[in-house]
Image 1 (cartoon, each protein chain N blue to C red):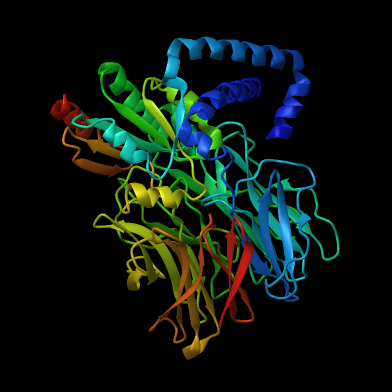
Image 2 (image 1 turned 90 degrees about the horizontal axis):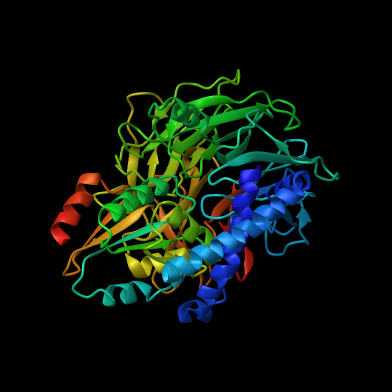
Length: 400
Length: 174
């Protein structure tokens, strides 16, 4: 810690001195030197039908509540009473979910002092009560990477979190042995998030800096989808399910675009399971040198390929999210993404009302400001798109 | 993090303050010795044009990197070794992080032997706005390197640049 503190203090000293050279630069003095807005937000409906969103303000996660589906917001509530660092930019964001009894769960990644290091935090509030002090969901206390958590509440009430973890990479570094990428670890709570059983590994060799998608499989069990590093350096996606006994089932390769890159894409996928078990997903990959968002129906077992894969939107589409509602022949699928067109950032969408056979395009909004990735929340089969905007705040667009 | 540091400070306040003032003194010394090497310039929509026009007819290598990119330290290490071997190589570094982390960017570059490289940092609230101005086919993957030859024909490479490709660029442009 002493070394970390020295580094931090050194940083302060550097900051003061470099501020002078930055201020002397005409380009820099033209724009105020302020932190970039950290707009990472998520949203979910509570069992009683109110919309909740979580954002970051300084060293606090804020919980926002709307009683009119996001058209107006009540004054936000602090989740962590004690200030701590919070990741909320790019692929990072706090998450919110509800247990069936109405208990609110909020998770986030808390960066530590060394680069890439962090811990996964969870706070809970029973209906009408204040938030508990956040707990760290993993037993591993090493100051290493535990980041990019995703939060899932199953229909059986189990609370699961999965995250990117570098304990195996660090162990290999100590022995000098090579290790590809990072790993995915998960922890499960069977008491509504009050406590977690020791974490376990879902898979070796994940990509290092992309968000993880979580969805509920047809049987209520959690499914996680993440960007993986298949040998030697194909950054496609992998899927794993936590069985009814809490044990992970074998990992399955989910996409086959074969983007070979020794780098960080910073584009994670999204996943939703339809009423007949179809695994609808959107993801970003580079194919023939072009970065594109794709939609497809992912394999159910080894040896299967992606079905109905196609490009979503035009060039420039990024950070797509997707949701599935309703059932049977009228199952609805919504895909949203953002696209900077050189002037403004557009919030674009496609909706299918026949289980994914046909989609029609919709433009939902535009912004001149810095914006977050869009997220979809669902209330009784109706879709609401959350888009956090630096100047406008939390915007919500119903899609019917 | 602040809370953690504060608690650490309580354990060793005097050591902390000594370290702080030593660091300030050390940095002042480094800064005067290195001269303009520590200046990190604000990278905006027109910055790539400025970087290019300052180097007409000359080859250079431009790397985008970030504190939040697990592969970037590896790329900086490779470039640092290259710079040590060929001190005349013109390397330009652009950090895609927020401008208020310029000090950390400079310190990281220095740690990899790249304090002699020209350094920039993104200065726009929307990184996608700058990326669009730089290269419409770049969607934020890092590191991202642009290899410019004498005629400013550019090859863009996402991820770590293979050592053989770097060596070939050095041989072709020297």
